[in-house]
Length: 189
DNA sequence: AGCGGGATTTTCT
DNA sequence: GAAAATCCCGCTT
Image (tube, rainbow, N blue to C red; front, side, top):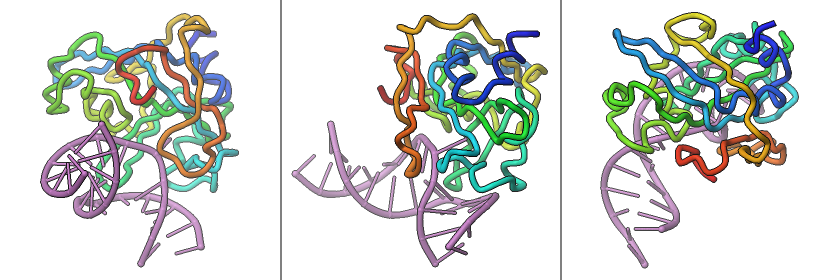
């Protein structure tokens, strides 16, 4: 079994820390952008903060679908955020990507974002804009172009910080946020 | 440096 | 009708 499937078929809170350090490869307008995931949060249907908590709706349908697909949601009337659906299938689980670090194509990301430096991708709505992700990408299979997820070998435990999630009112107690310790693109340490 | 409002979709009360 | 897994801008200390 590939690393992709064996990681993502697990529950979100187990898959999430293993996605730190993974590479996202985006092809858009003939350009290639590559970034590294540096901050994630886990959500599932047992979790009051999750969109899937209150059951399956047209919007959350993707979360209950196949692991390894992309769940994009529109929020606050202005912003897109993207998640990686995890398993087991039909559990309404996903990992929110909160921050990424540019590796390649940073100049083109700046064109999409109209911002530079840390501001390129140190937050969930920011990185979606920098990668040109919108609702047309909802349900996309992350093994396929133009957006691929490439999972790397797991980071050492001392490179990862685990803490509580950000920007939610319910379920604040669950320590379901992970980030790469000391990485400058992390939205809030 | 820090607070407060605005933008405006999907869902629930 | 209001709140939400957010960000940005303008105003005040």
